[in-house]
Image 1 (tube, rainbow, N blue to C red):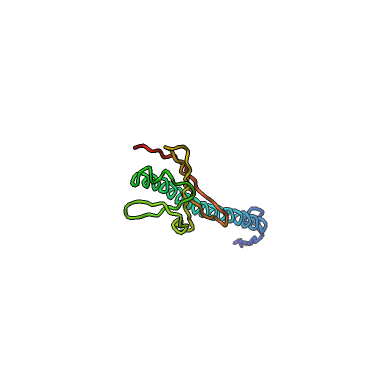
Image 2: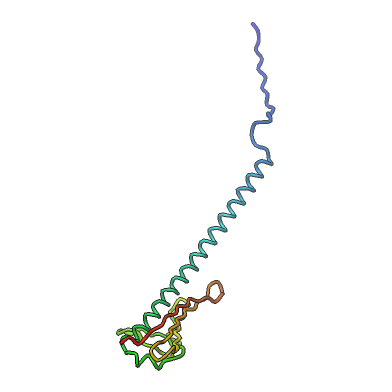
Length: 152
């Protein structure tokens, strides 16, 4: 009877497993992709916060325009006509009133609203409402302009 000899060949072939360089290259690539995804997430979150503040500023600016219009409608053109300069809108149960008290311009969340009235002619006023805030330490603002007339 012939003896069968089995010899184990434990030598690694060229195609089995990964080399150390391949593993290191994979780790570096995964690290770069992970860093890029993290940076993208931070940018998206920051942009979302910026858009939120800007959106709030736009809403408050629109409300300011409507507040001045409401003041005109409730009090008549003779009450609005002589006003010129910077004013602040104060909300009351019956609508809005225009004041010179800067504290009335504080809307909370770091937003401040002003309304600048200027006379165009005897029957027309220019109304410029500005909502200011800071974003990442930088001053920002939203400004809306409209013209009101004596329509009665």
